[in-house]
Length: 223
Image (cartoon, rainbow, N blue to C red; front, top):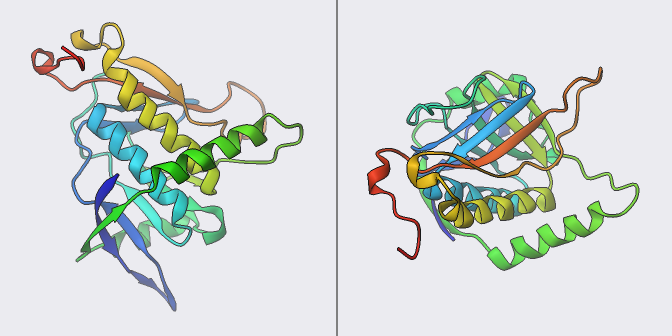
């Protein structure tokens, strides 16, 4: 996939960071933080571009991927706080508390075009799914919500797996019954999030497809 991005190189103290954002906003895509159930809701374009951004994040260990989602078209379903999304490899050591200061420095970015490697993403996703079946698998998708932003901290394989799930949701979502009447379709969920201690309902983020209104413009593929 060809992705148009904006690249920033802000400095915090003696350290330079590399941050990218989508070149154009994902207007019809939104994210609600898990409290305890979150909702990632998007149309074909939004879910497809998110798949590309997760694929890029998987192969870019030293880059923070910031996806502003709060300023798009307000979703007409779901409950909970609307948040932006940040993807970062665990090895970067990004602290959510440091993000507001870093975000304020995201000005005067430069245009960047990249191509993702779908074949490699598929291999990495398959590798994680195989490991997940083994006893004692320690793959984790850590997360945090801070400053109206949902952070996902993972590694190459887990981001690749999410990229494949989003691509499938973008491709299969338009065929689901009722979407041409404005109903959303549950497609999948983010891989198991690290849970907070104390029990209660497990935290999860559902991935749903929904075309944007007016629905008269929508035609399922093949029609």
